[in-house]
Image (cartoon, rainbow, N blue to C red):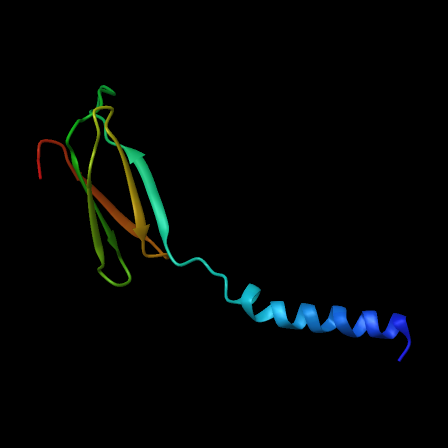
Length: 91
């Protein structure tokens, strides 16, 4: 076997071995972020934000910070999402 053909065979073998691992990479969760404010733009602290995935009914809850912001991790990928907030509620 010529050196060039051997190099080609080794390269092909390396790429074919890496392909299944690269192909199994995928998006398994999502994140949502936003803010809750009053009609005058004042942020709502301690507002409860409930996110519901319309397709499955799965739900997640998070509480807003002092600036009215929320960040929700590990949400099921998909959509559409129904996002509701209750300004005066505490958990």
